[in-house]
Image (cartoon, rainbow, N blue to C red; front, top):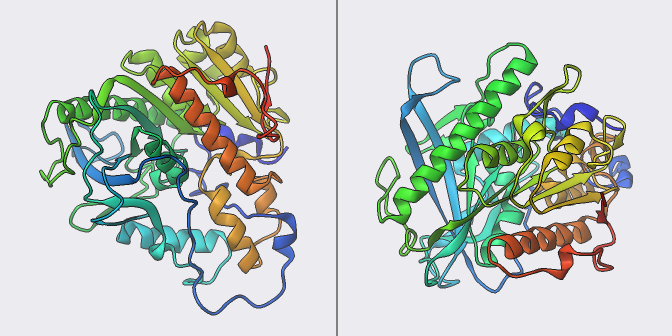
Length: 423
């Protein structure tokens, strides 16, 4: 079908997100009317859960690991965000979609990719439905914890719609930027680190990337344990929201990711028993299909719950375990609870915020032809976002919170775009 290589670990990296250039509907790309003069202000859908959402960030430094993408011997540094059920919907400030300097860098490259003149979109004015500085909602024993890893060369912010939904449903969600792979990461003090990857064989690069991502994820789990014990793992010892450490129940921890982030979730589960359940949203489990070079998790499978969510086609066939060789072997070798859901009319970036951000862009501006179909397909944007939220929440409700979910047993007429792929 379209861009079959985009689900590889490197999707979006070599061309600085060349394939993450979405649009919204076939007719929108043919618009000829002049664009609006005022910058377009984008918005995200409000979470549907019963709790308001709070957000904070941590600057984490791994003093025991040299950064693999730097040649100056510096320790590995990460920026992560924590999204949590808040005790109040008031106070603090609306959490920005992107920090200011990283947002400026994001705007420059994204406007260029979309074929827009600078300043046509008010990316810096985009805010989330979370507030900073608000206390964590008290829950005896804490809230289950979920980690999120974005796709290759994609900022952690592009998972915000799903992340805030899970937080509103009672989970603490931790989003991770993989420094020097992500195009821009803003650190305290106004320092922005941009993508810095070596020009080496793509398969070798994929191996190094995944190894780095796994180490990043396990380090984040270590720092969350420090936080849960009452410590402050932030490198600058910045003030944390009240109740944050006590709000973590690390005995119930899951992970989900898009594209390379889905590969990261599966491989980290294989090597780290602290993860109890995982989700791969349209991510290949291969370093190289031509070489038959698959991840260890493909050959060994998993013994804990795992959800595959695919969209459209990959390598000319539907992206399901019935057709994709890597997913097929993973499915056959996994002994834990498993489910494969497929969105036939979606595409690779259906599982990201582009599914909600790009349609208004395509209505306002004449985006390049083919952008929408390649990135998002023809699926109804509002309907599929509701479906993704519902299935992701149901999965973690069942496997982290112990609440069986009928939605995971059979197809639902409320979600007509989602097909159950039976063994």
